[in-house]
Length: 195
Image (cartoon, rainbow, N blue to C red; front, side, top):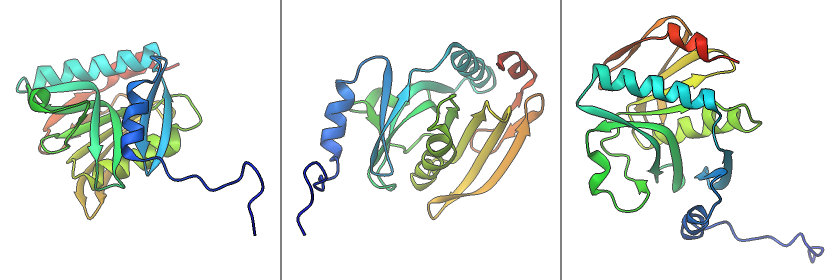
């Protein structure tokens, strides 16, 4: 059976093609390659930025040996040759200086952070695919700031491609991030960043 015009099977996007496309993307979007498919994420809003800045300050205050690198590209090879741009990647000071290109090796990253956006893809992207990609890459802690639910969800202990521990905490709670992060976040301020 011959496919009708316009329905021919297309070869999957290669990793090299994705990286070339990502380099040329307009500033109004962020491109990621998750679960072997192209993802387009809109540029974050002002409250997203305020939450990231709040978290960056907390991390620096409690762990001056570490830095929370915003919009850090991370390779998640073990998860279908993925490329994820984390809202934040917590790693030792100057950790990414020796990395080549914009997609860093996940080794040495202690925690990735995602702050949900108010778009239709955030559920699958932030709550499932990125979580699974970070776990498969062996990143010890994944912190999801879920703005829809007004809570922080902490995933830890990655084994065999999945996080074994999940805890959730409403805004206002003290949230202890497990080893190797070892930071307690007092989250009352996040109530100011709801919409």
